[in-house]
Amino acid sequence: MLRGESFIPTYISLPIYLGLAGLLALILIFISGKLSPKNPSPSKLQPYECGISEATSMEARWPVRFALVAMLFLVFDVEGLFLYPWAVILRQLSWNGIWAIMSFVLVLGVGYVYARSRGALEWR
Image 1 (cartoon, rainbow, N blue to C red):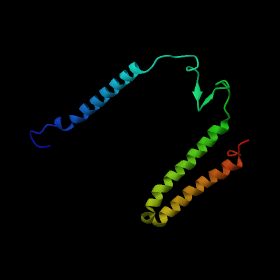
Image 2: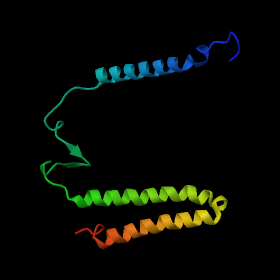
Image 3: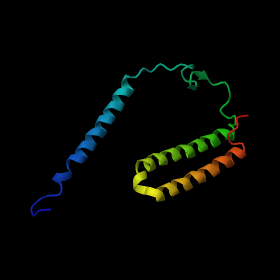
Image 4: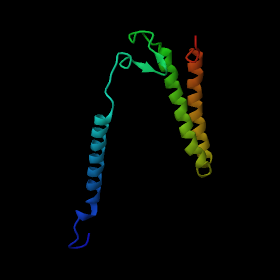
């Protein structure tokens, strides 16, 4: 900084902006709460999802298979996310990059074969 130059005026716009954004959010929340209709009925208070009213109790057990398939999906989805940046800089990586991604895909392939052999992807 130069002599006589103050640090405060440089960043004064950020707290002003954040304060105005927060104030606007609070005003909009307050207005939407006051303007929204308030006429609850027993049918409106029931849980509703995807156009189907709940037929079973929420205390029923969910099969672990749902969570297992979701986790496997995430693992292979993240694999795809790693492949895009690798493909973009493949020429810069040369053979080192090819060996690295081959080992990465090999580890995931072994995981896939193991999950498939254990029946993780079968819907019975």
